[in-house]
Amino acid sequence: MKEISTKELQNLVEANNELNIIDVREVDEVATGKIKGAVNIPLGLLEFRKQELNKSEEYIMVCRSGGRSGQATKYLEGQGFNVTNMTGGMLSWEGEVE
Image (cartoon, rainbow, N blue to C red):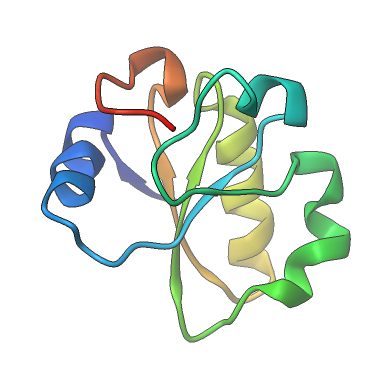
């Protein structure tokens, strides 16, 4: 499984790189703040919403601590997607949130 640290992702976000960030936390968790531009697809709905994703794109998976995003990364990898897990999750995120 590919991984990216919160600091590495923060640098990419702050450099205005075009990124596909999927936040797999629940809606009420995301309401407290998410990474700018992240799309919320709760882990429990990922199986049903994966058709919204494009296999030719790269996705970075985010959650609260890195566990659920790790599960999402493994699942999507198995479905043929190019995905990376953000280690540490939002608990370790020091960048801006929206």
